[in-house]
Image 1 (cartoon, rainbow, N blue to C red):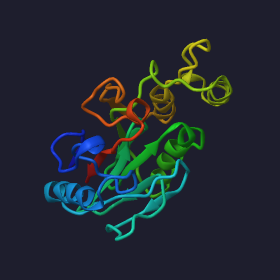
Image 2: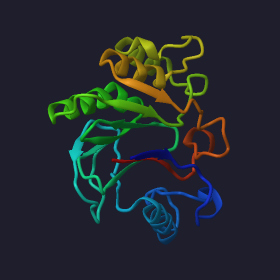
Image 3: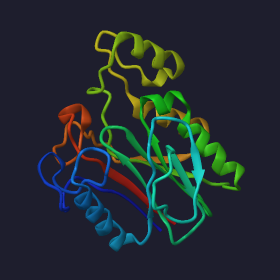
Length: 218
């Protein structure tokens, strides 16, 4: 039983992707990104990744795919399979129950699309009785500034994301926590901002950058 969050250190990539970039779609040398994934799998065993699109597709998997499936949440009951969610400011949400685990990609669009709530509901439908959650490093409510239109749209749906309308910064983590609390799910947070810390990849800070991951194993 293990869950953890990688950072940008300890890998083989260079330049903007230095050094532990796990994404193959961001412009890094493919062989280097794949070598970094191999370093991860050497530590935890087989890892299932997904092609994330800020949607609400949830897939149940039992083994890694050669080509990552398009989804924003993975669920498994396989104790020999790790799940990974890649991020560079979005929230890596890891969920655990007695028989199931899930890795969830929660960005602004995903939060509005209820990806976190839908994943919890799917786990419960599959028999999960007691779910705990851990929230990894992501952009904080002081850094995630959006347009006034987007701010009002998100806050109108999830009021806990609100900060100050004059600043137009969304607190996505507060929104996720409100959903977890509504479902009586015990949660914890790394309480780290990916944009503040140079130790993490941040799209908002650097634009051209790699991806770290949240990883969970049963």
